[in-house]
Image 1 (tube, rainbow, N blue to C red):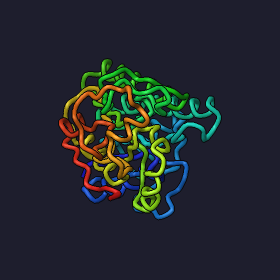
Image 2 (tube, helix red, strand yellow):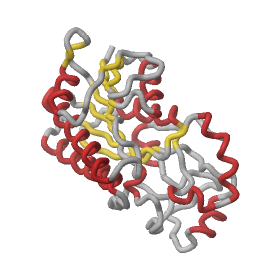
Image 3 (cartoon, rainbow, N blue to C red):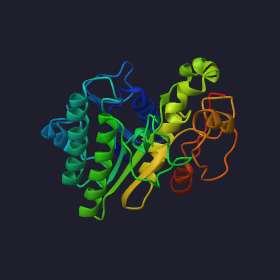
Image 4 (cartoon, rainbow, N blue to C red):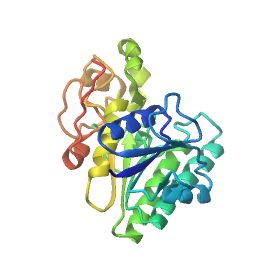
Length: 281
């Protein structure tokens, strides 16, 4: 049984990831400042901004465990505007550096972490360069939170350059949803602009956890980044109608379905075998 530590395992996406990895045979340890409401695996309270604590958590804590096979790093202040910008940066970026550096020190070569859809330029007050958006254009952070995620991606690429055996995969998750969130989705149709900030996309936490598991199984070393969204939009109105109203001048990179996600998951499908299994519909 392979051992994985999940930082932020008490959070919205973290809970789904922990459950999914346990269901697929992993030994899971949750590293989080907040204890889970319903524990399903061992929990360790760790301050990720303290490098010493992170090193210990990735090498072994007393009689809890010795050695770790993989790391899933989800812990962060999860969005812009929740704290002052400087506080968001001071928490998120050093925490990610500490996880990457401690994993390298511990000889852990399998790291998956949560980047963000915001790196694509969200909220799209400035229209995207084309739709569907994908991983092919340079990051366009529009907030301190997003800037931190882009710096995380830059760090990951350099850590992998330093160590050719290392694999670090960044998953640019869309807006995470649980099934109970879906009851409000039908109301979005009344205003095309209410969810245009991320091109009407979302990610079911259960499909987000699928992406994490597949990224852990991906066996090519080096740095990769993937957009992770569900296969459809949050709208019943068709994409061409929505785009004509909100982003009429944005080029279409390829043909797409009437309710197909406009955050392209083509790369994740191709390289990871990612196939969203859930929909609000």
